[in-house]
Length: 371
Image (cartoon, rainbow, N blue to C red; front, side, top):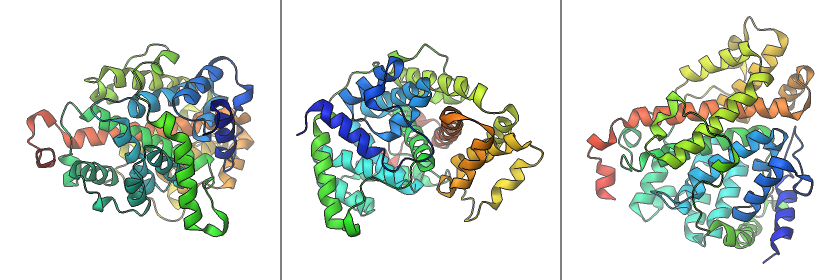
C-alpha cells in the first residue's frame, strides 16, 4: 500500500492523463477552498480529475464534492457500496468509459470482485441478489419513464430520495466527464484485457482503505453556505442530509452560471431540457442547429456546448471547444457552462424518476415485496 500523500499525488497525476480543454489546479498548488476540498477528498476518497477539473471555479468543486459525498458515499437507507456499484450501470448506459472504469475500480476496492467482473462484462442481469439486480435494472432503464421498473421501483418511499439523488449524481458526473475527458487512464498495453484486470485489482487494492470507510453526513455540506431547496428537487426533502447537500450544490451551480453563460443561451437550453424525455438525438449533430436560431454568435457557442453536454456528450469534439473559446476566455466559463448544463439535465432526470414512481407510500411494489 502506498503512503497516503504519495497515493494522492499519483492518483491525481494518473487521473488527469485523459483530460482535455481545462487545466485543474494541481493537488500540490491548492489553497483556500480548493485546498479544503482536496483535503477532504484525499482523506475520504481519492484525488481524481473528475473532481479536480472543477477547481477552476472553487464553489463548483465544493458543490460537486458535497453532492458526491453526501449522496453516494455516506451510508443511508443504502450502504455506499450499493450506490457506488450503481455508478457502473449509469456510466455504461451513458457511454462514460472513464466513469465506468473508475467505479469498477471502486467496487474492486470493496473486495466484491465477482460483482465488479459481472458489471464489467455488462452482465448485471446475472447478479445473484435480487434486490441488487433490480436496482441495476432500475438504473439502466432510467431513460424510459414508462418502464414498469421505473414506475414501480425496487425501493420504498423512505429509500426513494437516496436513489433519485444517486441517479442525479451519476447523470451529472457522466455528462461532465464525457466533455472534459477523452477516454480512460486505464488503457492497458496492446488493449490486453488480462492486463486491465490486473490494473483494476491493483487500483482497487490501493483504494480499499478509503472506499470502505463509514462516513458521517454533513462534512461536505459544511463547505458551502445554506441555501433553499429548489421546487423541482423537493422529492429530496424527506431526507434532510441529502436535501441540504442538493440545495447548496444547486445554489452554487446557478451562482456560477449567471456571470458565465449568456441569459438567452440559458433560456434556450433550459426549455430544451424541460422538453426532453430521454430520447436519443441521433448520430450527427444536426439536431443542435434548430435550437440556435436567432441567437448571436457568442450565445450560439455557449448554447451548443450546453446542449451537447445535456443530450449527447459523446458528440463533443474539439471544434465545439475552439468555437466556445473564441467568445469566452479561460477555463472557468467552460467549466461553469458544462456543470450548469449537466446538473440541469440530471435534476430533470431525477424529477421524472420521482414523478414516474408517484406516491410510493401508497404502492405495494412487487419489486420491494419480492426482494
